[in-house]
Length: 378
Picture 1: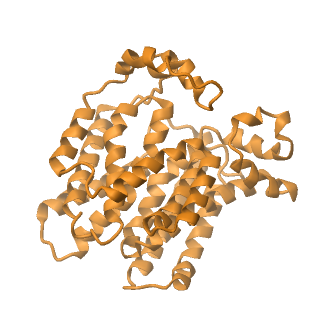
Picture 2: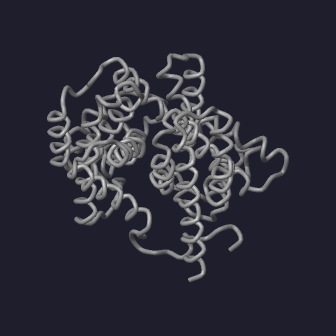
C-alpha cells in the first residue's frame, strides 16, 4: 500500500509544480529566454528525478537497463545492427565514467522534459495548460516506448526551426531523431504538406467525415492486404520483418490486444471529436502562430488512429502525430477561458475534455500490479 501512496503522491506533487510553473510563465505577456528557463529549471529537475528514478515501470525497462549496462560492449549482449546508433552515443559517456543505470534513466527523462519546455517556449501564452498537459500526455507512453520518445524529443526540438526555415538545425535534429528511432522519418512529408498547404482537409466537415469513417474500420480488414504487402521486396531493410511476416503482424497472432472497454472507446471518440471541432473554430484566430501546424498534425493522428489500432508498428507511428493533442487542447482551453468569447457550448465541451485528461491520468487502468509502482529505493 505504501508503494501506491508514494507513487501517487509524487505524481500529484509533480503535476502541481508543473501547473505552478506554467502559471508564472503564462502571466508574462512577453518573456525573454533567460527568464523562461529560470522559471522552468526546477520543474525540469524534479520531473527528471521522479521519472528517472522509477524502477521496472514500462514494457522494456529491463531491456534498456541491460542495454545500458552492456553499452561499452554491446555486441556481447545483442545484435547491434538491430539498434539505431544514437542510443549508444547517449549511453556510452555515462557508462564510461562508471555511472549506474538509474542515471541514464534520469537523463532520458531530462531529454523529454527539456524538449517539451523548449517546444512550449514559443507558445508560452498557453503554458499554464500546455506544460501539465504535456506531462499527462507523455507520461505513460514514454515509460513504455523509451527510445521512441527520445526520438520524439528531437522532433519537438526541431519543430520551431522547421517553421522558421532554419534548415541546418532542423536537419541536424531530425537526423538525431532518425538515428534514435528510424520511424521518426515519417514526420517529414507531413511537415512539408501542412506547412505549404493552408488547410490539407479543406473544411471541418471533411475532417469530421474522415474521422467518423475511420471508426468503421476493423483490424481484421488488414488481412485483405497481406498478400500485397508480401510482394514488397525490402531485403535487409530494418522493417523488412514486418513485411516478411505480414500475415502475423497485420492479421495474426502479433496483433496488440488492448482490451479497451466500451466506456473508454466512447470517451476516446468524444474526446477526439471535441478537440477537432473546438480546435477548428480557433484556426483563423491563431493563424499568425504555429497553432494551425499543430492542429493538423493532431488531426492526421486522430484520423489514422483507428486504422492503426492493434498494429504495433503502425500504432507507434500514429502516436507521433496524435501526441500533439496536448498543445491543441492547451490553445483551446486558453481561448475558451481567457478570451472574450461567451460561447457556453465551448466551455461545456472544454470541461469534458479536461475531465477526460484528468480521468486517464488519475484512474489506474487494467489490472493493478504493485510491482509497477516502484522506485529504485524500493
